[in-house]
Length: 329
Image 1 (cartoon, rainbow, N blue to C red):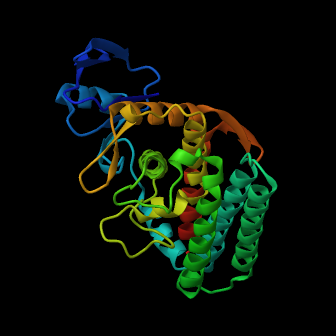
Image 2: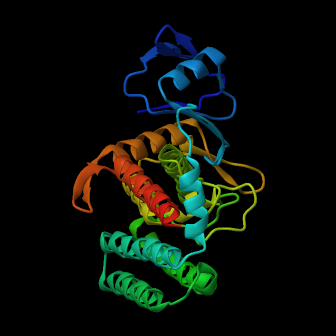
């Protein structure tokens, strides 16, 4: 469970072994049991006593901007990478193993995009043909991806980015068919969003980034040392690599919310420059919907676990891969 502080003026304090949320609607006491993280957004505040309570119970605190992007995190000092993992991670990024790993990451992303498009309910033969053609085009990208060969990631990086970019463009164009006409978007827009669909996607990805970074930190990996994404200063680039197969989970939640037509004008606002921003209600509904979805138990790699747990298991397996490589050197 996540505590989301997103209403202007909200204060999070401590009452013995529980958190207390205070805002214009009154006070609410929340026991620490079952709380995994706290998201603090602009216009809200948290006391040092609440921060210390979170640290004591290994509850992470994420500070997010209005796009949902995490600008900072507080976590327990009990986490942390051991030197063998970090040394192995550096070796891994330079090895042939990294080529196979990043190809598998992007390959999974493409196949998940295909699966998402297969779930779209089309209304006539023309729509169905368009979506199927998009699925087939992504499959051709996946085949070209599988054929790539290189001794190091730099040998295939440009080709990887090209194939991933092409597949994503085709995917989002087709994904529009699963969204009500009034909420369809012309193209992906990120900084900032130009429509409600992109605003929801951007904020949802921000929440997912935090979950992936948290899993990597807990596993002992360095989120700032990436494989494909390696040249962005002061950015958790390994998160950008690991998140790719899981983005479709945000897509599913957003498309479902839009298809159910529960999104109203209270969910968002548009500024003078045409940028669309989620308001408190929109953030609350999206985060709650995404958190519920992430807690659902699904079967992956032969294991039935929550989606959150599957991310944690992947981070742990990756950290062990780093450590094993260091042990051999």
